[in-house]
Amino acid sequence: MTPEAFIAPLGLLALVFNVWALIQLGESRASRPVRALWITVILVLPLIGFMIWLVAGPRSAARARF
Image (cartoon, rainbow, N blue to C red; front, side):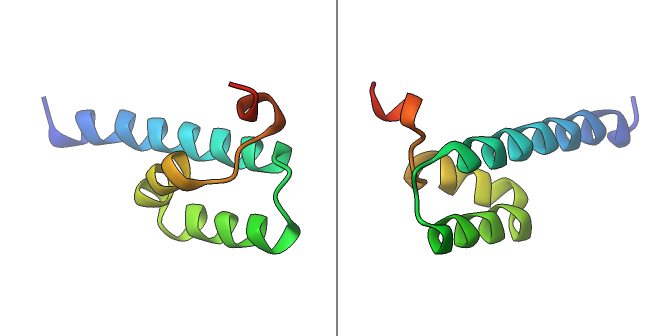
């Protein structure tokens, strides 16, 4: 198999994770400047930004209960 056969699904998976993170970010109770900062981080650093957001990002109302 070619390397592209492995890279393309990983890129699609990263896109799905980033979209999910942006949706969750929209549901969070964080202030507008904080959300804008996180959106910037996720879009500028797609893979690393998602991982940072996953660990340190603001929690949505549903996630904050657990």
